[in-house]
Image 1 (tube, rainbow, N blue to C red):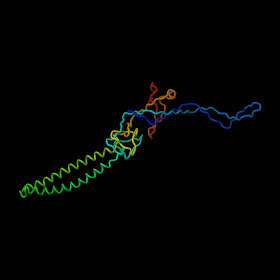
Image 2 (cartoon, rainbow, N blue to C red; image 1 turned 180 degrees about the vertical axis):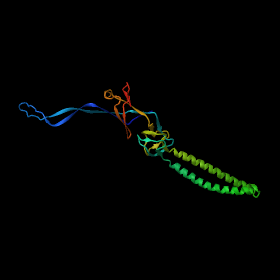
Image 3 (tube, helix red, strand yellow; image 1 turned 45 degrees about the horizontal axis):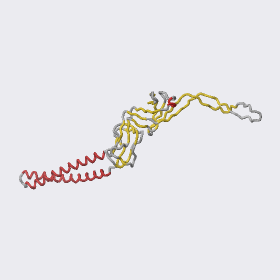
Image 4 (cartoon, rainbow, N blue to C red; image 1 turned 45 degrees about the vertical axis):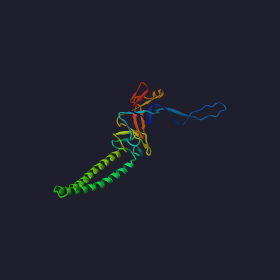
Length: 254
């Protein structure tokens, strides 16, 4: 479960020396015959902090990593998160255009309204004729025709209700949501591009314990020890970390 972090900056702070200039203190200079004396100032050497900075790219490793890919295709209407952002389970990550399904849903719901009116009518007719039929007041054919239309209305309602439920389920596929609490590690798509089923949109990693692995040159390694402070940049996020382990192969982790 690995991913290249956009930028990792290592900041090593150690004791060194720097030169401070003491203004106004001049030293006597003896010039050679025929030369003009050149005024000079004395510089005092004092002790202070010396900073060394190294910049490397590394690999982020987490206990959890998942690639988010859509089950459907279409134009990406919006991406609602950015790299490095923490997200909670169920939060919207991206939305894919589903106008055709919206139109289909509107049509089915309109048909359902009409079918419900028909069902109410034939249910009332059936209820009235059933009593007359039980009393032998109407012929079998008349009763059978009303009963048939009543049953058809019931079936139509059932079919339309099932179709509407299926469309609504399909529409949810166009709303891409986080499967759990995580961090947006990488975004491979952008608004306006075309989503393809199975093609990655973004990568999420766990928001719990993580480690970053990098390879350091041998020359720089002499300035790095366990406990060295590290600034890691992931998207817009910056993490203040420290070196926790240096491997014999000159790879090190924190």
